[in-house]
Image 1 (cartoon, one colour):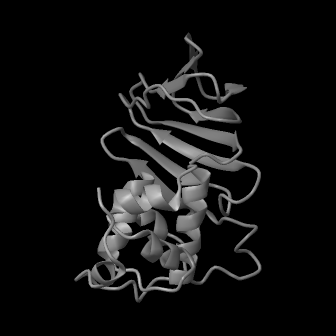
Image 2 (cartoon, one colour; image 1 turned 180 degrees about the vertical axis):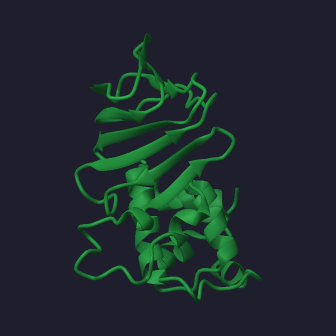
Amino acid sequence: MPSLSLRRATQTPDSDLSELDEAAIGGQIRELRKVKGMTLQQVAEAADVSVGYLSQIERNQSKLPIGVLKRISNALGIQMSWFFHAAPDVPSDERDWIVRAHNRRKFSFTGIGILEELLTPNLSGPLELLMSTIEPGADSGDYSHDGAEAGLVISGRLDLWIAGRFFQLEEGDSFSFKSTEIHRCANSGDVPAKVVWVITPPHY
């Protein structure tokens, strides 16, 4: 997909994000792109914008229309609501340390039935803490990545596959494995399963 020129990208006929902290959004885009191991070129092509324009967005040097943010979100594999969730009145002395329950960043995988809530303030540290809500019948499919992870089933039932082995976990059960192993999770129960995950390095 060819990149757009800066002129074309900045003339996208969508409302600018005047009510959002654009500086925070630019940093979050860069943070997520790096966590996913994607280059500026890869994200720019997937979002149909120029590399120069995307770089300016990440450095908070250009306006960011909502339509462009939507395309960037799709390129990064997240929902745009990720960028809208942080409350603007978070105390400055808590922003990099504390996540209040009502201020969790939330994102979901469309069509899969899995909702993720970030429990760590950001993705720039050495680990990532997540709360997953896995709806009945939901299935993540097989995947693997660098690092290691562990988890605790808070409620419901979790079906877990690790390197071809199947485990069924109930409330209070926990687990740990190398993320390089092909793994998969699902919920074969009748109620949503809630699982807290620790992943290092951050992978979202």
